[in-house]
Image (cartoon, rainbow, N blue to C red; front, side, top):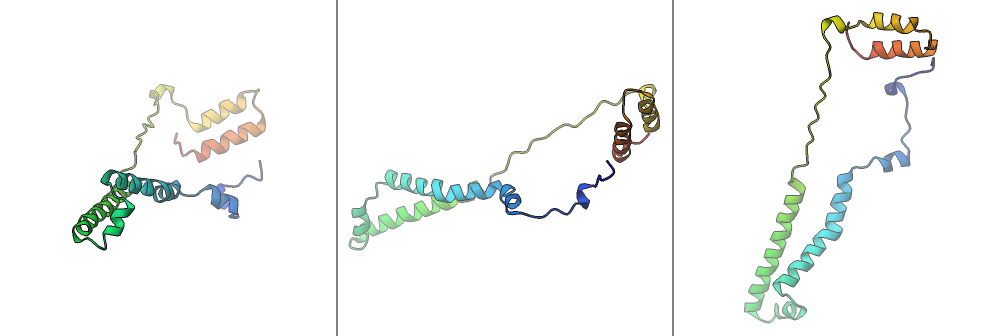
Length: 144
């Protein structure tokens, strides 16, 4: 109990485990998006628009197909860009938590000193436990 220190006073060494364990989960989402979802979306768009390898070879020889293919390609790039912007800028869920506590009437309230005297007067609690409760009561920031 005498060797107790505040967490802010402790000198933690950063290890590879610590850095690896506390990474940003958004980085994993971004990697998954660019490695899986984006190519999958591109494949689905190619299938829906009916583009084939023959169409890509005709892009260089036929002017009409070139315009149509360029339009398709521009639309696919635009859709991927808009989808990326949507995923990057969508709002994250916000959870509101109500931290309301019961506040007793004035005749039921007890000061910290009277609580500590009552704790010391109880014979079932050890001296170490009383010291611990005293430290917690003083650090809690609760007034009398």
